[in-house]
Structures are given as structure tokens and as C-alpha cells.
Length: 268
Ligand code: ARG
Image 1: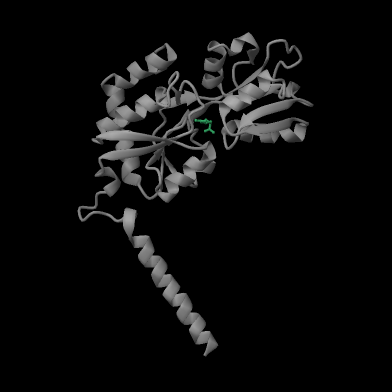
Image 2 (image 1 turned 180 degrees about the vertical axis):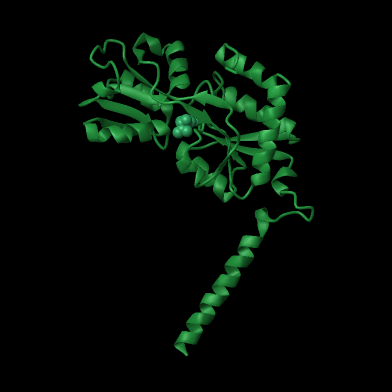
């Protein structure tokens, strides 16, 4: 009898789960079109300590940057009336896309095999890679190989953090921060000897005053492609983003944004 009750309980639970899975946001419209494409508003998540990709405008809460303007242009091309940008911790973005709290993650996301197990990516929209920055007066770090016994600051959940993690075996101490700005601040305050982060972000940081106390070492540690994060439940959204990226590349809007933020034409 006990067994039967247990079996029944499992059955009821299974039916319940199935029903829940078929309900709400994941429902397909009768024409097979993903309802996420029929909305007026695209909900975009980002972690905005990442200039020139996503960062607050001067004396304002409003966000700007290459990623922000690109996703706004993409949303428009896809037929959305508006794109609403929500800020959150970088490591919270993929989970929020997967629970449906966000439609897309636009945050300088490197396309990695590890992340591809969890989410879909748009086609690559920017070529980046990691860089290494130390304080200006530092003369003993000429490459990553000289970081033994040193402390490196990184942002939580990033490819830079993963890279630094692998250096731990070689006697490198890693300090992890919630934002990219805080990692750079730690370098300034001498709580860290180096920062490993995305090279274009480090270059921008140096150009915006960071060069007063910091400098780049070498030409870069990796090459990485940025992609827009979409849930595996929404392949149609991924396809629509790719199509609109093609459109913006063809009509010159992509090049215009690229030149505005990076001061040069994108490499062909
Ligand atoms: N490209 C790196 C990664 O995907 C860092 C991205 C950090 N982005 C940000 N908005 N803080 O891990």
C-alpha cells in the first residue's frame, strides 16, 4: 500500500511538472512563432562596469556604450518598440536569461564552449581578448610568466577570472571583485599588482586616466569573440538577432557605432 501511494505521488508530481513546463512564457503561438518575438519590449540584462561597452553616462543612471547602442539598434531592427536595460551582477546574467527574467544578455559576453552548454549565442559581434595591466612603476612584470608571487585582480565570473584561476598553481594570488571598476581600483590602491580583464576595456580605462598610474603589458593574452546571450528555449530569438546583425552590418549602422566607440573601422 505504501509503495502504491509513493508511486501515485511520483505520478502526480510528474504530471504537474509537465504541465508547468508547457505553460506560461514558453508557450508557442499557434503559428509556431516564439511569443518573445511578438512582444513590444526587449528586456536586456547587463553588468555596467565595462566601458566602452556598458557604463553609466556622466552624472546619470542612464547607460551607454557600444553594447547598449548596438542592442538598441538591433531591437529596433527586429521590430521591438523599445529595449529596456536592466543592470545586475555579471554572474547573475546567464541564470536570469535562463529563468526568463531577461530576454537577452548583452554584456561583453565571450562566446565559450562552457557557456554554450548553458545558453545560445548570437553570431560574434566584436573581436576582443584578455589583456594584462600593472602599475606604471612596475618593472618586474614583463609577461604573465612574471606574476609568480604577485596578486591579480579580476571580475567575478569572467573569462579573465578563469584565466587567473589557472595561474594559481604557479603561485599567483587571485582577488575577485564584483565589478571591473573595483578590480582596477584595487590596482590603484596597491591591493593588487595586476589586473587581467578584456583588453579593449583596459585600453579604455588607460585612455580615460588610468595611464596616470597603470600600463598595459604585452599585446594580449587571448583572442575572444563577443556574442549576445539567449536562452536555449528561444532559438527563434537567436536567429532574429543574427539576421538583424547582418542587416546592421549591411546598412552601415554597425560600422557607424563601431567607429563612434573605438575610433576606427572594424577589421574586415
Ligand atoms: N568578456 C568577458 C567574459 O565574457 C568579460 C565580460 C564582462 N562584462 C561586463 N559587462 N562586466 O567573461
